[in-house]
Length: 266
Image (cartoon, rainbow, N blue to C red):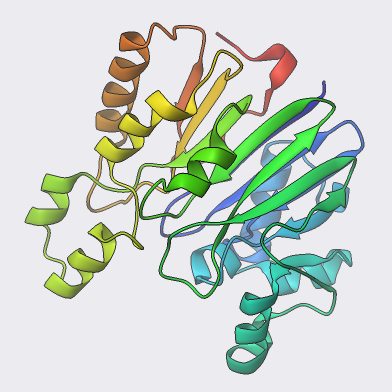
């Protein structure tokens, strides 16, 4: 085992992922309550005490919810961008744990033998970031909330062994939904969320021969459908002749089995 990932669940109700190395584990986001987060960790046989740090992608509650209590209970740092920390310090101090490690996008962090590179993404948050996580020559690219795959995101997410990418909504389902017009515009805007077609089209630019695992995440419960995404993504992978890629659509209400790079199911 060199590097692996476990999806604890993803969607507007909460997001969290475990990244595994031979030296320990880290969390990307802790968007479930402490109790639910621990339950999901134990369900996938990950001891909460094995977590070395929590990486926060941005301050929205479906990514932040359990951070303070979980980090304080296990005395681990919350890694958060300076601008996001500054906003939370002023507006939501009660959301912050005692142990904080600030970073700027582009800084490198080191935890559990992994090198973490945060990078700026387009989303309607204070200072939203994605992450590239490297360990012993293997690499995970992670972007769960973004309105577009711009040049920087493409550069960071291209040529990773594991790609974690948002596929939030179906355009027609969003159009027909009961959501307010301003909310529809926000979601569909360049700093909103990535729709199915844009996510699938981006695979042409992001996947390389090196890529072996694709996780599609942050699926809307009202404006999308898991099976629709599976069908679209599988059709695109077939078109690209990438039957070798393990593809999963991550759901909100259940955990998924850990995928390790050197033993990925085909």
